[in-house]
Length: 300
Image (tube, rainbow, N blue to C red):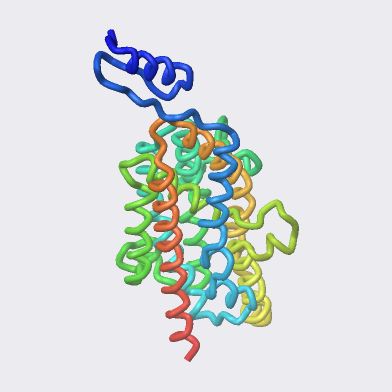
């Protein structure tokens, strides 16, 4: 019990405001309740911190690739490096699943993981519920099909040793953020990655044409028209890239739901979330920077 009148007034005031209470002689302060207005303010900060990143709005490599200027050596390099990304992303995705802070985050991560491994997915919702597994549909096998048509050594596809130094830096950066044991760091990286992957989707053809998946599709279409069709060669299949473009809409919905659930957790750390997201975007940019450097060398 508080004996003096001043303490009683303090206790009454704290009780009325809901900001704290006394436990014995100790003052226990309560964090103010978050509101929808707070969440909307946070969303605006995310748009400022993430949506304007260079890897999203001005990726030099994909802007060049979409013009259809890539030669065969440059396309081979893209497929090899992307195969390393695709294959080793599975490990990081599993870490994201087991370290998720929310059930929503865990469910979303599990769906992405199993889809990468060959389980069918509803492209509109991102759900894998009730869908079948097919080894043929494991994403790395779609890339192996393209690699085979380009006469690439199958033993190089997806192997860590095939990755360049910058591809390794990229994957290690994802592992440290997206695959972090700290679920909030993983959530920040997850949101940033999906922001990058789903950019422009659902906002009209002009915006969607600037999505990196679609930029790669357009570049490969042009490559087929220039280098394969005139030689009587079967066009490289675009399924791997088109499928990811189509599924990103479902991923985007899930990640916004996860964000709201994460934000209203009592221990949510806004600064940690933002920092992790920016680190993940920096890692992704490193991957494309590596491809940009190599494509210039292969143009000579």
